[in-house]
Length: 90
Image (cartoon, rainbow, N blue to C red; front, side, top):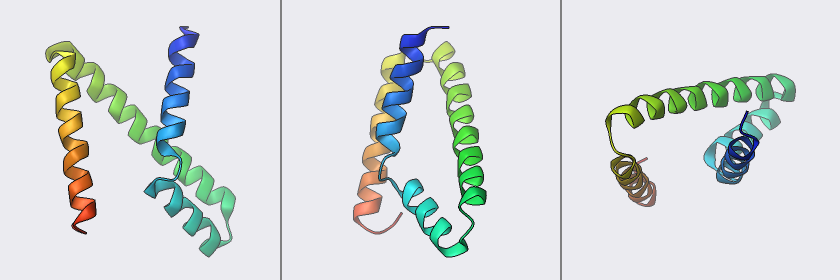
């Protein structure tokens, strides 16, 4: 086990997820339902599934596409999503 990779990933994902729409949605759902453990379990499973999908796709793409192009496409996707959010289309 490469502990450095594990803790780097933990730190980066933790900071990236703080205050995002997912966290706000979980907060709202827990407040509305009054069932925080069910919301926690559902949110945890969803994050694990999305993370697994990201790791799988990243592993496959990394085998066929140079990392530089993966980063460029990811950067463009973030810019596009940002523009869509700013224009209330996302």
